[in-house]
Each structure stands twice: as C-alpha cells, then as structure tokens.
Length: 68
Image (cartoon, rainbow, N blue to C red):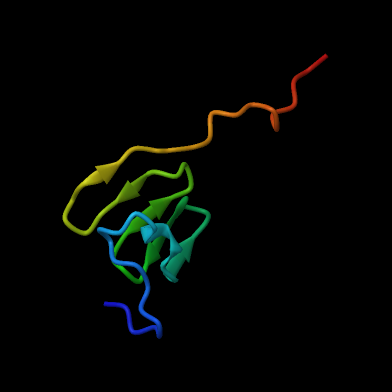
C-alpha cells in the first residue's frame, strides 16, 4: 500500500501509528493510514487483518483538570 520513501511501518510493526494518513475524518473520530490501519481518536486501532487493538491512552492523570 505505502509508496512513501522510506516506506512507512507495516501494520504489523510496533510503530504502525507512524504511517502517513491517507484519509482523515475527525468529525467521525478516525483516520486511515497508508499501511491499512484504521486509527481511532480514542487510540484504538483496527488492523487490515481484522485484529482489534484496544485503546491505549496514557493512564497519567496529571494533565486532567478537576473542579474545585
């Protein structure tokens, strides 16, 4: 799929999210990467072979504001 030079990481690579987006739909919450990965805004992924990668947001809550 990818025609970039150097080629983007494959869908099986640990760094697959570094691939270039070929379609981006922020209003729907997803992007299609050139390696065939559907990347969702909650950090979940759907790989081309149908495998689901659960969301993997950081668990660090220091950046979250709380009401006083």
